[in-house]
Image 1 (cartoon, rainbow, N blue to C red):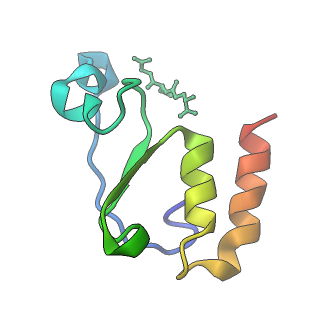
Image 2: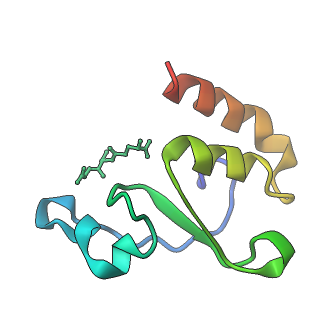
Length: 83
Ligand SMILES: N[C@@H](CCC(=O)N[C@@H](CS)C(=O)NCC(=O)O)C(=O)O
């Protein structure tokens, strides 16, 4: 989705076969120990925010000010992921 809406991002691979999703570092990002998760360093009021759960990530991305024209694409993905 980040590619589709052309938001720049840095990818941090999590090897679930090696259980990296249960490392202390990753659990501090997503306490559920699941991927995906994102950190927006420029979140609300310019402060970093961490978001996990695919649907929550998509809803958050739909509200990012620089991507209003892509909101319908994001909403389509949310709808698709919830069926
Ligand atoms: N409800 C979560 C599910 C995420 C999920 O199940 N991710 C899998 C990979 S597709 C995972 O992290 N599995 C590793 C584990 O359960 O330890 C979401 O929508 O983000």
